[in-house]
Image (cartoon, rainbow over all chains, first blue to last red):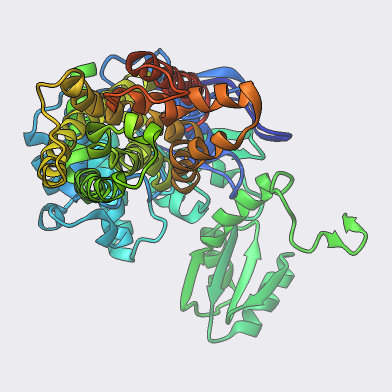
Length: 307
Length: 256
């Protein structure tokens, strides 16, 4: 379990994290969502004791992480891709980490196998691809078989296969009863991985809710439908009092369910070839909530300065 | 906790290629320059002044390559900490061992041991390589002469202290190039320049300045305007203790 209590962090005059409080429970993947620069990485670094908060506290299993008697058994972290000495061989990197916490040497081979890195174990880290570096970071995080895991933007730079693998991996960790906090600036990614969301913008808490409720709460949910008789269908929408717009050859309507749209088409005797809820609306739910908190609005800069 | 972290740091240090080549550079530079200076000093002895002849110290000349060898250990020491800040490995290190003081103590211990062991090997090798060169010109320094063994072992101690000097700078600056530049400036360039300072205070600055003080431990004949072997080495230790103590406080206070 992770608890943030009134975490606040300044960098000079910049307020990176502002009185942030939330709790991350074990057993589910919790998504830590926010635009770039919202303070996600800073918060994770404060949880790990790498950065000192100006006020507030972060607790891991009830105490500050820096006081942990067995740090690697308590927390595993995947931070930025570059957090290993490039001149070390992958195996030596894991070996020295294991030694520092008196973990048995066999754990090194176990986590290499777990992350599919066995064949690359004797290569120097500077020669590894980004995907392999991420796997090595995961291997390091898993060395102590920790009960709490922090992943900072783990899918960044991964190919689709790697993304799928890491998603499955994180879900299985949560299913084993561990606490999993994973940050991302991509709502679509979070909707596939996280059951619970902690959303922040400009260092402040915006939402702390289940992913389902977060999406349902959006006013921007839309349904897209495609028909060989698109105009007749548009008229049927109009008669029923719904505004539609054409997007990529689809009719898009806001404020209706797929059930309602299907029934409307059936009543209008218009065949439907495709009908679905638009996933982009998840992104919009996120945009809607964080709109005031993104650091800079595109197009809001006028010649006289920031509008 | 300390012993497991020491083991971990040992693995890190011995797995990196930079460790190997800096230690080879330490031995080669100390022995090579010692031999070169032994040859040069012997050649110019006949033409030197009476005062220079009085202060002629074949043992110290044999060990004078340490002036370059110390830079190799300082580079190794800087790298043990600065490279981790530069490449981000420090985050993995401090996440695995959040009590940073233990990490610093382990790294400092290894730098000291490596410096002393390889410094001692270099000193002995430099003495025995220079010995036949001096013998060729009629000088016969012997390990049994007063102060000779102390000077040779002192060479090892001096190299260890130079390692800690570099380690303190590396931990304070957290960048490799500035830390190495400052180490070279403070240990090799500035000590000679302080000789140009005028007056009594200038002489004092010269006497107490880093390697001017520290290297007295490798002399068997006391030079004019210099501290004694042990008092000089003591002053040198004050230098690195100040850097390392400041680093110990700041590394724990700063964000990693």
